[in-house]
Length: 125
Image (cartoon, rainbow, N blue to C red):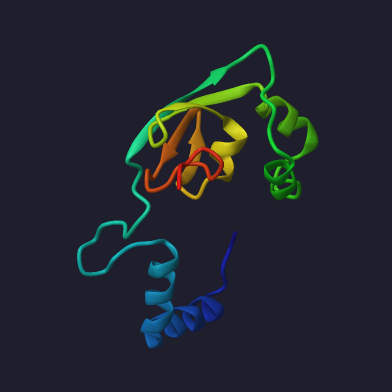
């Protein structure tokens, strides 16, 4: 991508004249200016995704909440996956883990978990 000189200079002036824009971008990237660390959501647990032959019975509330996020084919594949949840200390279907508020990301068969709360139907009141 080639940027012409005048438009590039104008964009540099815009960035230099508005430190609020830079602060906003740093906030979006979750970088704390004072400490230089990421602010929240550091993974506390790294959990491996396990494959099962038989699919889990996942409640309709969970599948309906993920309808727009995950395709039907991917959802049926995820019903055959589970994780050993470190919060509730038992095997949990991956779709419940994915819908949990402690879920951060899944990378190469590993779930990064924040560890604050477990999946709602497995936590005891």
